[in-house]
Amino acid sequence: MPTPNHRGYDYLAAKLAAQGYVVVSINANRGVTGADGLRGDFGLNLRRGRLVLRHLQQLADWNAGRAATPAGLGFSLQGLIDFGHVGLLGHSRGGEGMRAALARYRDLKSPWPKRIGPVNFEALFEIGPVDGQTARTLDAEGVAWNVLLPGCDGDVYDLQGVRPFDRMIMRSAEKQVLPKSSFEVFGANHNFYNTEWQVSDAGECAGHTPLFPPYPGSAPQRSTAENTVIPFFRAHVGAVKLGALADRFDPSRPLPPELTEIAAYARGHTANLRRVANFVIDDFRGKTGRSSRGVANTPYRLTQYMHSGAGPSHDRSQRAALVGWSTPDAYLQVNASRMPLRVNTAAFKALEFRVKLECHDSLCDQKMNPAGDVDFSVRLVTGAGNPSAPVKLSSVALVYRPVSAIPAPDNSVFQTVRIPLSAFGGADMSQFRGVRFVFDETPSGLVSLGNVRLVRAEAPLSTAPPRTAAGSVPAASRALPPAWENNQVVAVRPAVPESATRSGAGQAGVVEIELASTRRFPVMDSLPTLYIGDRAFRWSRFVAGAANRIVFSLDEAEFRQLPDVSDMRLVIGGAPVWNFGQFRRP
Image 1 (cartoon, rainbow, N blue to C red):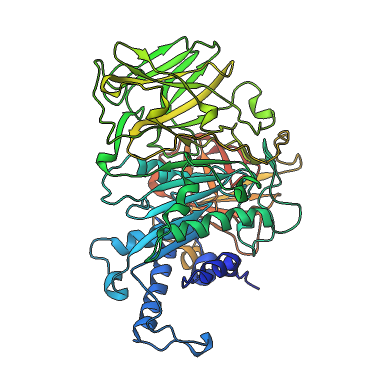
Image 2: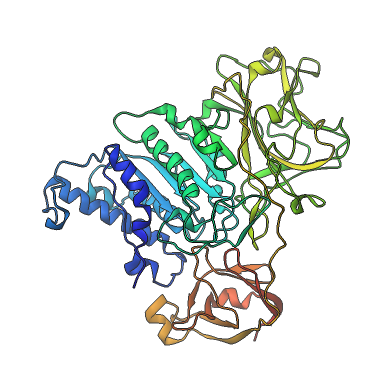
């Protein structure tokens, strides 16, 4: 029997309906969930977007009286739905599918506005979503947006759902104040936000306490969804919006006890993507040592300093400064100007930056400290290079070590820190020069810094973060593939005819690589990814009736470009990697 996946969110739907929302959960089992991926739509998330829009079309017909509401519903939908206030929610592939629905509705010459009528999408909430399973880059511009990231996700183990945030924070084209945020829940797994997904995707958690017990479901984990999803939609969707409920997504605001009593969290946030709202000091997109404003930065006694990518969880476009230190007087000063610069303090209210602690030495084999794992101080630099009074990081944010599901590799995700300018001891912003990060609190460490800017967003004067009630446990050892495992390449061949009817793979110019293992290949929302050397391939299908066989399709041109001999491995979610040794191209 098919799993009724769409019923897995009844616990959220009922609470939203009690607030006056019309809530529809879509069954994607027929034609989507069980279907093979397509070229350009490997996870069928563009198809999911079309499915969402087709449902909106049907709802619009019932609402307008163009079609009769099915008798089985028990009441009429005519005139009941307000398409001027629409919110979307998607879990896993459904998250990217909801972004696809937004994009397809708004596409130039899209047929959907005519089919549905005017729709005002106001907000989108994603839970443990995938990103990049289609040929299109899908973001959530023009709506309020939040992504909930399960810190112990054993399926979408790299927490790639933060990538739309990375991409959107670099843009400044929005005309309205529409916040974007990320909300990482330490100890949460991927599956138990859906009550129909009965088996945990993660065995244990590395560096943090799991919220999920060894039996199906987790009431505490579901509570972290209830206390984010419901307030999010009440704050952003409807004729009457309760904006104060969105404070919990802002890292400069304290979290309510109904959340802090369950787990620890890391929040990312940007309040406003309008051009006038952000004064960028350094996004670290330039060469090492030069800020985004074309001024040389000032490193002092650092063991490491380089501008680089932000790590595997983050989008390729996201840049960071990787900074290491081992002495208490080390610092990095990011500079906005060589000469004093007048900053309009009537416009800009706070300093904002992103930070994450990287693994070093035996850090990732230790246990998470509920009071935070790294601390340093932040100063504004004015006049002739004079630093302001310091603000300790630990007074405004708790930054933890990278955490993950086991056996998945550790993930490392940025969180946002926002400090009111008034906290810096009366710094003269008419003489502003830059920001100094002084590593004087933790004896040694390695952090990434990103997106340093002055912002219009307010931040409260008292920003001390609440200590969480979340416990911590030592990290368990990483699971390895079983010693008895035997992996082999079954065949390398032109696309076979039977695959043509199922996945479109039987077309000319396609090469199939069939793999087999004595260990089954799990079906997850994270796409199976075949790595041949440094190349990654995601167009695949499972062999019917064989849980330990999988076929990858490569365009013939891609296949010809492979080296003659390459290492081959298969990655599926957070499961131990399948190694196939050296692949020799025929």
